[in-house]
Length: 419
Image (cartoon, rainbow, N blue to C red; front, top):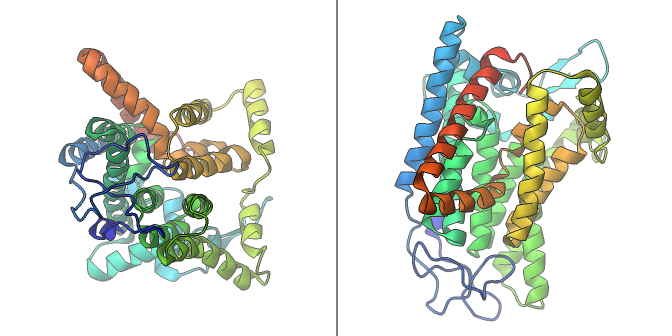
């Protein structure tokens, strides 16, 4: 995945090199295409992407500080922080798959039922098994190592996208904000969102720089990581279609290959589950429906909102509502910012799944963690504030950090709510 940057940018069918950078911190010029790629007269860039030492340092510091706060709170509550991070909720299902394969079904005794482990995609448990084959660690520790490594790779990819579009300062701010989201504690847990985000960031960066085969490979990886990983394939396919129409079919075989590879991960697993269930096209969706998860055009979301307004609920529910509402506003700002097509399509699909899908509402903020393009308007505003009033920006970042660390500790240690 991270080997994306080692390859030269692809050429278009007309012979013009696209998606290249003459400097590592170049910002696209006004003649950039709708996909966010720029035309260059200097030929393919062969320089490795810059290593974002400051951005990654801030991200790691933010997550370490959050983990430290969580550890202190957990010890005060007489709980083990490593166990909470590595063996909570869905993590247990992934660890079971990594150890025994797809064999588990739990009958909850009430509809929807039964709950099958085939609802969980295979890449993360496969990575856990690979780590355990190399290192003498338990499943929970292996899951944490996978998630933490993936989070760092995701932060790197996010930085490169921000750097390409808006420069070094905005890129650094995007990475910092991603590490300080109210629900970013998930990035420190044995969950799949860091893995999906890593594949998504590098796939989208590959699209922006014209590396279509790598974009397709990374999109296929994203499709094997999570059910909503098909958002990456959708972004690759939509951008490829745009390029084909824009260039009247005069594109290279690399674009066609990347587009063909992009949906293979998600579609392959869905069809495999269907074959195991005896219904090739509908078997996987039946599994998800038994978990109470299906696309109902937002009916489940509206019913939950009605219940919340009439009956109230746990603190996690109104907080989840605020986060989802903020995501809708940020998406509108992203559209107003005229973000590149692949970022818009990717984010739109993730948001559509959250708004239009049923399921446990408190988990919806977690499903939005991979939607990092939503942070572009916030990062640009933060950079403008930092340049005009540095003290104000410091207060904003400090407030976000306090909220992130406190809310993350509450979610993991006290909430008793599936994440």
